[in-house]
Length: 272
Image (cartoon, rainbow, N blue to C red; front, side):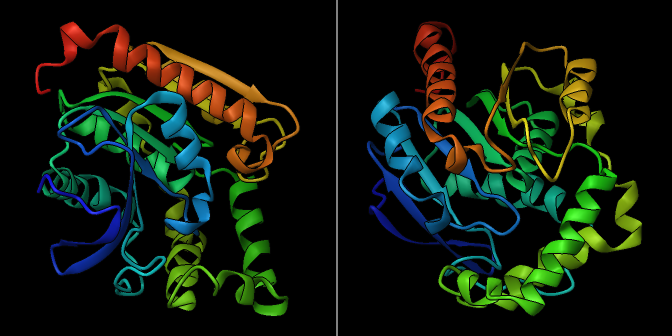
């Protein structure tokens, strides 16, 4: 597919996945593919995709994974390797369906972990860099305690009604993510092995006050990656720096994107 509408649905396997395409189509310019957090969707990125498009001149593709936003609900309970499945089975089909030729992955939280798994398990010359916002490579105590707290808030406060604005099946979105992370077997989830196989530049952004992960996540990437790793710690931000410190986050990612996509255009644009 090369004639992507600005928004709509992509048929990926049995699922209809909602998407938005901002800026030039994938066959016209480099494309930044954005992978949302564990409770995110197309709409919850806010205006960050538009700002990223304006700052880089690249196309920006955002989509909601199955179970999120207006996409097809997911079968529950989610398998504990749901991020591996997204990276290995869904993303390749999404790239083919959209005519993706070259660009970057930008992922937040679960989306950052999916991006790491993809880049570490596919030697895909189309993906020229990976920017990860608040990634998880292992499960930490702080992650589990915060996620347990979110469950209590979902069941006792107005969090459910707030999230229902963004997800057509809000229980599917919430429990698909929350049940997996709180499963005792998930404590052994560890994707650090994939980092050694990433062959493109990596940028990691983490809020200093991230309530879901510590600096240990960054240390793991620095220990395991052989590729260049740019680390930016963002003060005044927690787990969602693109919402809490948008200007700093935008500048960091857009600088990284411009450097990767346009400095090396001649040598790495084989698929363009």
